[in-house]
Image (cartoon, rainbow, N blue to C red; front, side, top):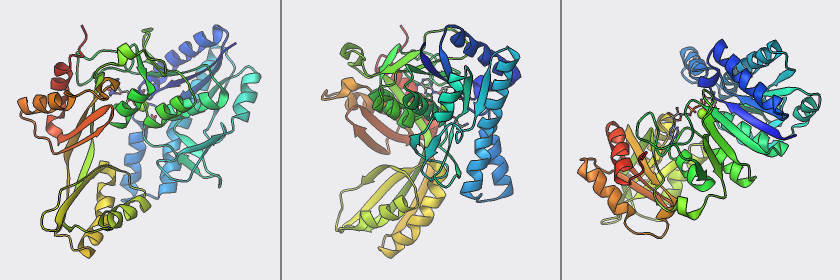
Length: 405
Ligand code: ADP
Ligand code: ASP
Ligand code: MG
């Protein structure tokens, strides 16, 4: 008997009929003789709606209260799914993240899982139950409810798979698998049969929403194969694992894009030791995640410092940086939220020249101006005008010849 963890995303449980559809799929897996643990997201746009409601009540909702509020979305879908399974004659029980033993740190809205104590899950499995766990949430040492960041139900699923020693973690969603680019933007995108954790992590981190980055990290750390597939059909999907052959890996495999980019530039900064630390330490203390950082070569002891943050953090980051900028004698501090990022990703780029040149030429042929560039060994990212992101993704997808053939 195998233990399988399945996760169903928001679109897959949006409405009673879809919840029944998910229940039927779970029953199939159970009938094949497996023990099944299921993680669910909130129904449809519930999380967005709850957030909106909170902001109607308060301009700055309290972090702790906000996490309790958002966690209820997943509780709703988990109970309804348990009821659907009961209706089909199958024993099932829903558990909140706390009941499932998901212990996190206390960083509200982006908590990290510290440990899983799945005693209750194991007990319910032994009783023959299908166990439905509310995704996206955990509990701190002080018994406060936390959430794991947008898209975090994927992470709940992989963490549970690791904690329970499951054979595989299956992520069921509203597309057929992981594609070479967001299929909603690039109709010719190719559904990949398999992908290495490393490439998937770069894709997820740089905008491919289909997997939560932390889930991919955990999968790699605990050697959990992750299958991404549709909850609406029987297509095979994409396997994320560590054993992808070199041949498959040997080129640009995907284009990721991200429209959640806010840029801050501190202009006319005196170029002396300690300046970067004086800006980035307070940002870190405020819990603001900084992505790209670029400092210009200085002329006459003066330089510009540019960095990007998520749009949701932009106002807070400006509040932190503005007073520091004037303290250190910078000329000006400006923000911009009309930007987006496009990335080309593939392990084949390691130690091979020419990829950057082809990316930049393709963007220039399309009249797309590059504002910032960052790279890793297997990725090149360009920050460009948000309005040109779709055009850039399509052009790059063509230029690197990754279309469906
Ligand atoms: P769920 O609610 O099931 O977690 P998400 O909306 O979080 O689903 O993620 C699935 C979405 O990710 C798809 O609908 C698709 O638009 C988007 N996406 C972005 N990049 C990719 C990619 N490379 N491959 C597949 N889907 C992608
Ligand atoms: N419901 C949460 C969100 O919308 C978590 C998830 O779906 O994974 O971000
Ligand atoms: Mg998701």
